Length: 375
Image (cartoon, rainbow, N blue to C red; front, side, top):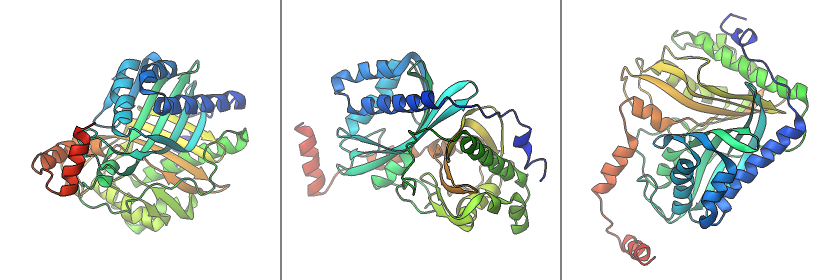
């Protein structure tokens, strides 16, 4: 194994043993906080936020919300708008996993907010129909409250559900993310410590193998040297963000994401700065970085954009389900709107420009306008 492939064996990552009872309590606490924020009466929403967050909590949200500080800003810019635009919102968790990273307790969650999209959100036009808003989160819990959060909301996928698509067609399949095939992603039972450690360390070895590319043309020989086949189940599911899409198996992953990304960003590389979560919880693992993966768009087109020469920093999380030997499923929230913004494309600006020039003309549109005016 090369030095590049083996770097995590000598990196600063050290698996932190888990107090199983505390870990389960932390997961239950985060579930309770998040469900309270979507279920509490609107008059009690501010109190629910104060109960769940420290006063000086920091929340990092996907573009265009970005960084927020303080419980009032978090309530006003995240939870109040969500409750306003989807009044009957329901939170459906698919994965809840926990662990220790850098002397802190972390919980990772992913799932969908489901409900009726009644009002525009950030300029995304309301459909008055059912939507499933994809979310992924990393929460640092201190003394029973959230101190730091990373919140990925797939706004590009919500645009898709609203009938608007501001970029080139995705190479992968655009679809709702499926829950784990084993339907055991909400991990609320004690886990075997050896399995948890093996899971996260196997993920980090796979990450290290991805770094073997080193800017070489992604020929079959180079891809084979990454030895991805050792890490992945033959029929693994790779659930990508809107703009990239979902793939199946190693060939699908290579054809629809890995190769297009490598040829677009030949100098891409990660740093240890920006990692906020690396945990294993039984057969599940969660990793994430906020700006840790950096690259220059000098190769080929990406997301339909020709080479821009722009340097980008990526915000990304990964949720994994493994078996005893391989990765079986991978869910990957990426802040695609933020990547596009760094490449010089403001998809929210495009959307506002598009809908500013088109007024409702159908009878059904007129009736919906009337109904909204009478509320």
